[in-house]
Image (cartoon, rainbow, N blue to C red; front, side, top):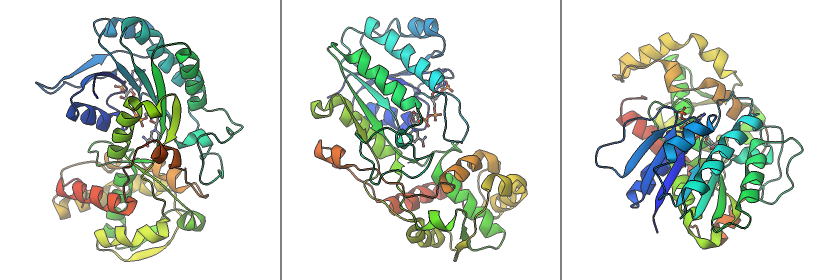
Length: 351
Ligand SMILES: NC(=O)c1ccc[n+]([C@@H]2O[C@H](COP(=O)([O-])OP(=O)(O)OC[C@H]3O[C@@H](n4cnc5c(N)ncnc54)[C@H](OP(=O)(O)O)[C@@H]3O)[C@@H](O)[C@H]2O)c1
């Protein structure tokens, strides 16, 4: 099944692979963001410039797109790395889409919202493991809760359906995107190797031993298209992760092997502070390995690394509902890291 998809936040970490996937599946895609790139010639893809804080700009940009059948909302407001993100801003952005599209697109069939593991409050402390979609909400409010509540309310009595995905720690081969766990790991290893260190673990002993999960961006794109088009998934939210869990202590040897390094020790470090003066070390690695010119800060977002490695508890969400609904794809997380790092190496972006 295909149609015409509006992807809000089309250039973001989540949506970039979704756009690729939709085009490969024969969809027409309308990508909305504030800084649209040029669409490749011949692709059934149009980028629209609009600001989701400016409803008039949205309505103006979408006016000509009466054929929209599906909406994927993957935009998010600018944020820091504390895990706490603005409810009012993210809600206003989503409301802008929900206010504009149903009135413009008479054939609207589905609205898909991207949420995330922070739904369960994993940024605030331990969560139930595995966390299930209908677990009681954490006490602290979250923008995903507000967005999903709005979506449920707007869908009531409408001919279209909704779904939501909850990925956790998106990973990808994504040149130019520093906020990506794979490039953070790769640049961290490269700097340590250049300094002559083994591959130490930058988090705590608790993190080293705790359960962890991630979501491959390509798998998420596949799940989102499934959830938006399979009637069994209508009007529900789904955890979407690789389908396995791991502990860093068990994955670390494969990462060390990839870089030809010895596995080091658990040596907690604040990456943002540690890496602040390491650009010269990175430049040395760039020269030594003939990499494409880059600044260390453009390869890895260290504050994001500090967030990921700073959580000490088990992180695992259940994908039972997703499987029971008919989505069968899964990804081996260790193989995913090594494969994505190999792609960075082949492109001479990481050693
Ligand atoms: N990345 C992850 O690891 C991850 C993991 C789990 C869940 N999620 C969830 O996935 C969703 C998408 O996150 P993401 O990480 O993919 O976001 P992102 O990489 O920060 O991208 C945000 C997108 O929104 C657009 N945007 C931002 N402000 C806008 C505005 N005012 N008007 C129009 N477009 C705007 C951006 O383009 P412009 O700047 O050009 O406007 C960009 O396309 C969020 O709900 C996030 O919490 C992400």
